[in-house]
Length: 345
Ligand SMILES: NC(=O)c1ccc[n+]([C@@H]2O[C@H](COP(=O)([O-])OP(=O)(O)OC[C@H]3O[C@@H](n4cnc5c(N)ncnc54)[C@H](O)[C@@H]3O)[C@@H](O)[C@H]2O)c1
Image (cartoon, rainbow, N blue to C red; front, side, top):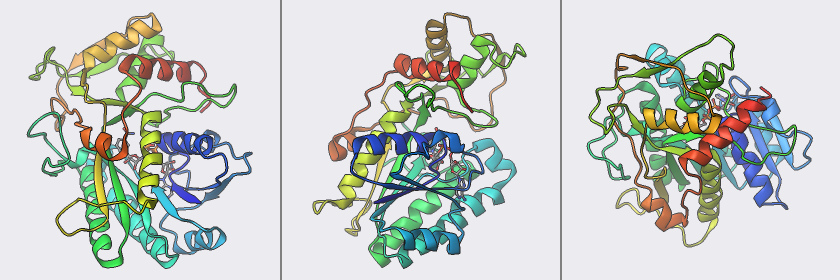
């Protein structure tokens, strides 16, 4: 059985649904303190889903969870993930993303669980020295959020050498979209408060969803990109879910070979993106095509720390996991739009 942290969050809830569908004979343990996520995103009536409202760093509570179930591997999504907030409240990020995770890793070790898939991020690379970014690109984060994720990558590397932990760090680019075919009344999708991601903000502005005529802010159109706006790589949340399932299989297989460095540790880091960059203006055009309404926007100054382009080279994930993304930008926007029309939380 697997244990999923941050299971009630945006990516976690999509993974949980995807995993339960792909593995009809398996149960799953979900741990989330609901500090950000939403319990409605999990089908708690499903008898194969065992939900615990607990903080991952709560040694007593997590110890009981491990005692109650025979866990083979962990998928670790729980974290705070706002770049801007990580700059104004860095200690919140060190505490939640690093200290809590270290305590959780200790609980894992005590329960003799040694396999983990970790949610890392392209923010660990910092300002790109070249694009598309492969896994050999130097990791020099330029914000506290990215630093906290890199610290855990380093901790896993050390634990692989000392305690034989087996791990896969999945470095996502921009997660986007929603379950494209949810059962009626069980729609799940992106719901961050405050929302900082472009696609939901553009859809909301296009449809005037919050009834305040809010206009989208476009931060800078003088970047060295084709149309001057920032370019990002939007990866569908179900494509991410599939990659996690494949990473779990790999961790359990005898043929798993790590390659983070020459030390022969059993650890891997893989980029997850589409290799296609879309500019802010291209995303706006895709949203307008899907919603049929214009996206009202204002051009404002650049945000400090926004690199011009972040695009993934995912060839390593393709070679090792046999994974490649299935959703293009339009399909991703369509699924996000469907969610916005039926948003439950
Ligand atoms: N969304 C993206 O584009 C993106 C990109 C790269 C990496 N990531 C990483 O993916 C993971 C999931 O991101 P998301 O967008 O789904 O975020 P989210 O905020 O929707 O989900 C995070 C979940 O973790 C839970 N949580 C936080 N701290 C916890 C704790 N101490 N104990 C228990 N539960 C806790 C929250 O309640 C929430 O349900 C994060 O680790 C994030 O850093 C996200």
